[in-house]
Amino acid sequence: MKIAENILYRLAKGWKSPVAKQKTELGENPDSDEFHLNYAMKKQFLRCSSTGFPYDFYQKKVLEIGCGHGGISTFLIVNGAKEVTGIDLNTFHLDIARKFKAKVEQDMNIKPENGFNLEFLEMNAYDMKFEPNSFDLIIADNVFEHFMDTAKVLEQSFNILKPGGQLVIPTFNSIYSKYGIHLKHGLKMPWANVFFSEKTICNVMIRLGKEDPYVASSYPSLKNNPQKIKDIRKYGDLNSMTHKRFCDEVAAAGFKMKRFKINPSSKSLVKEALRLLYRYKWVQRSMFSNIFSVSAEAVLVKPVK
Ligand SMILES: C[S@@+](CC[C@H](N)C(=O)[O-])C[C@H]1O[C@@H](n2cnc3c(N)ncnc32)[C@H](O)[C@@H]1O
Image (cartoon, rainbow, N blue to C red; front, side, top):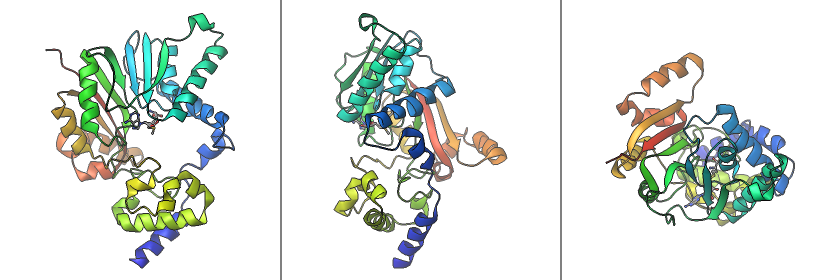
């Protein structure tokens, strides 16, 4: 066991950080508003601009679940959504989201009386206080691997969507995908959970946390000696999602899967071959597609009766 820990420890120490660029891109001080406003702009708003956000949101009434810093919701309202509501549990993120909205309004010389039809609310995705059949579109980006009760979120989303409305999940990660265990700031290496046990990963993370203040501040729960990967995260919010479980839960909630796309982890020719392979349902549900992926995307439709 100690041998495995030593191997993983050495790999983690030598691995190039996949998030090194982010640290310089967003600013020196991760505790400053400036850093988080940069995150909203560069990692959310401009990320949507760069892809064109290829979902039909024009003149739609939109809900964003797990809006975080608010950059996606702000992008949607600036680019033609009729009305946008962003919800999240994290009050610090919501505060940044409101500041980001105000900053964009100011940059666009929008007078307060003509402010964006956009609000950010503190609300739990398991207990959404909206009327049934009230949204045209729901967006949930980078959150489906974090909800501890995904079935509940799907059930509630189904209820508040209008018939024919869509729940769009631009990105979620299988726990077995390239960085599915979400420890980029500590272990850095991909697929650690495919090669090492949960106990080994936790022990190495605890050791890294003791040695490196950056790792300790990125994962404050390390001081509690966590024995589960999910408990290393600040909010213990990693649900071990797989592609198969996701597809089963979507069907159980009554949604029609309009699109389910798995993004392969490899490069060039192999990537194209995997893209073709991942069109087959049985491959989508296999362990192979979970491991050889970086993320997945889904568009779900509430059928019109
Ligand atoms: C990884 S961030 C994603 C933020 C944003 N959607 C993006 O793609 O950049 C996940 C967000 O989901 C929020 N979240 C997690 N569980 C939630 C819940 N049950 N209800 C509402 N928000 C939740 C977290 O607070 C966090 O802001």
